[in-house]
Image (cartoon, rainbow, N blue to C red; front, side):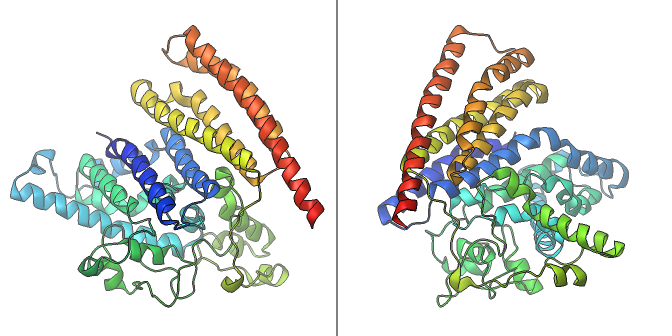
Length: 424
């Protein structure tokens, strides 16, 4: 049973509730462009995962078969006192490994390149929890190998991992304050807000997943202070609503430094040195600007309201498509979802361009919409879905209505930008 897949509808319901509370309180913790970008990153991670998730399983399976110290049958993990104690032990062990994976993801450059995606949002709400990296499969699995070497069953560790991730969802909110005695043991919204800060006082603190006790034990704990509000985001801002660029940004500037370093040990070492380290010769030629949080401004390009409405409507369709793709994957496997995933990825990229007000965004969206027809043919070719006339009629209506709307929305955006330019 895939607990995370089962939890997705509840995640979406919780986001809707938080949106309503935010609107009622006028709390200002949501922006549509930021939320769309965060959830888009999560959708990209989920759908790319259909083609990459087997890699960690190969590594874990190899260790289990060849190096497991204890043979722990699933029968041990029942509802008896011993079984429950084993489940709790597995959950604590996973959270302990997660702490160190998370901590090293902030301290080693190549791991930060993957993890930075989760921190790029300059807002903090439940949509931020869904903002996940698509490249975490490269190294993240390594940190959990000791648990497989001990002999915990794969099904148990996959389950406690899902529970750990589901728990972490709710701590991504600004609408819940401190929780009294629970703050001493659990990872809470207050603790995790600190973790997402770029303030000097807070940066690289509070790494725990479910528990804050690891941070207290290993010296990385920092409480949220009333006299210093959290400034969310990263010190080298993403400044983009493109979920693909979000996953590539840090790799790109590490590659830049590696290319311009003179010594080979620096070209290779930069990937595995402490986050922020740069070769002296590169720093001298291409110095980084100092961060001034007092002058910090959130990335928020000006676009017409009509564009925001169009992207919000298209994003609702993208969410429905993602849920459908997940169901199709469970029923028919990877080949059946490749074409739908490509269509979804193009849509997410297009929404990012539109929300940025890019000059070529309309042309890209038109090409995407027209290109849906051959992609639909591939969907029907690689799956057992019926080639229903009603489906084609619905697709044709969607494409034509979207084309009319995007031309109207982008025209309104051009008029708005021209008006702003004339008034300056």
